[in-house]
Amino acid sequence: MDSIGKYKIVCKLGEGATSAVYLAHDPFAARDVAIKVVEDHPGKESAARFQRKFFITEASLAGKLDHPHIVQIYDAVLDHSPPYIVMEYVPGGTLEPYTYPERLLPVSEVLEIIFKCTRALDFAWRMGVIHRDLKPANLLRVDGTNVKVTDFGAAMSVAAESTQVSGVGSPAYMSPQQVKDHPLNHQTDIFSLGVVMYQLLTGLMPFAGTTNYSIMYQITHVDPPPPSLMRTDLSPALDAIVMRALAKDLEERYPSWDKFSYDLAEVFRAEVAPLDQESIADTEKFNLLRGMPFFDAFSDAALWEVMRLADWQKLEGGTRFISEGELGDGFFIIAQGNVKVTRGNKLLNVLATGDCVGEMAYLKHGAGQRVADVTTTCASTVMHVPNAALEHASDACRHSFDRAFLGILVERLDLANRRLSNA
Image 1 (cartoon, rainbow, N blue to C red):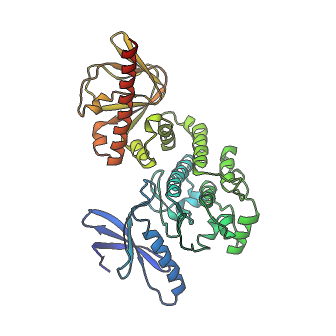
Image 2: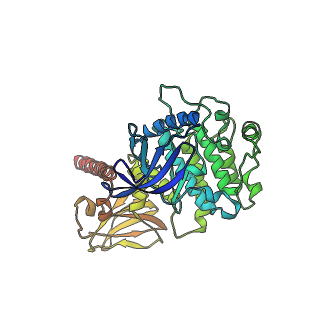
């Protein structure tokens, strides 16, 4: 097969019982894509029926799960023979190679990867989608800790009126509720991601057996040993996170993705961040942004975009990072700490975490001269957002910045009016 639809086939990436995935090129968008094709296999009609249902489920999500840590579905063509789905091509491979004891990733990277998965799956849940088949093979590693969740073929729509197919998923990663065929919510995915986290940390499965039945018995009746018993350099705090995600009782399991994310970030902040004083991990960046009122109206996707386009710096107290008279090429946001604004020997203002400075260089749509010096008063983290970077940001991201700055201007005008009325 040389082509399918408008797409030129480059090579076959993989093949399953009833489908195959090809690397192809989209000549109109000038990008490589992955194409999943449903193939007919004589003698496997039952599996083919399930695959077609999963195919339709995944196709229905085209354009809906727009998140930087979810593989994008660009197009779905059901009336073609064979039908196919066009997806974002991620060349990095899956997390499967890093589930073996001799190839484990550093704990810091595992924490960031799982954190990003929790944010992606929280987004999916808020869109009414439960994945139901989380496993290392369905988590693609782009590079470093940049990961994308893929294969929503087994996904369940919370709002769907049609009967959902039961018994789907990979047995070793199923939650007790999946095994028992109970009604499901997002907590089934929390359990499955807990299994993945256990495996990435230890190189072992929390529930192991010689048959699927023995594995499912353990999932429903046996508590796994804490990860630190399998790997002694893991902390009790990490044990607590994994074991809560793997709790059999829904009342004891994490009630929300936010709670899961928060605990991951806290462990990272307490155990990993102190070991690396220079760099700022994505986990820390995301939580800093989410904690600032300036970014209240930003979506998760917009926050991840801000993280990428901003230049983050950890500065010692007494560091001047804006000088009077220099040309401004963007604005700064105080992510942590405090700064003072001075002109000559006169103190004009003191700014704290979440405040902006130098934003006129953005609002004027051009580089203008800075009118004051800005200096840290203590150890601080500042993020510089260059005008040039924002020009290449998505419309949604730019509009979020515009709304945030509009809110600041309204507050300043209101304050000025109140001062005038009291004069």
